[in-house]
Length: 139
Image (cartoon, rainbow, N blue to C red; front, side, top):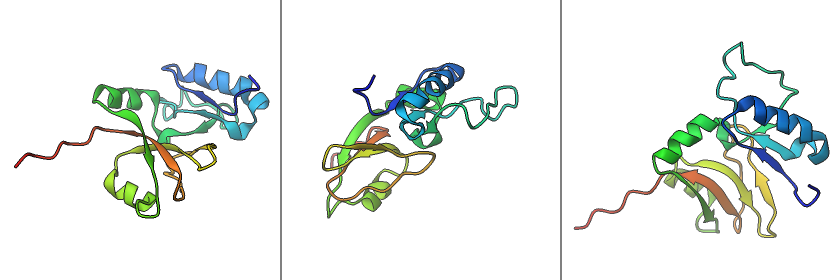
């Protein structure tokens, strides 16, 4: 496991994701363990203490939400940023995109946590989950 920098738990079992992340958290470090939002977190029966589990990524989307998007044709994509195509422009072009993180110019990946779309500089590549773009109408 020492070859890996992060752990990202994504299954349809919220309790399992939380157990795996809580178990491996000390090995990876609390800042390096991530999971999708718990689908039933708002139900008091399923609520867990904040000290259990990892940092929430995928802009707060749960497994069920992401699965619904996959069924609608969404896929993971990588979009390079530049001086002329900035993070601001990306957010304007793809307001619905779920930004997972960014790969810096030196190849280091950084997850964005919570519902934050994060910041990324020119030269970085955004890893995002997006719906297919509509094809331009032929004239």
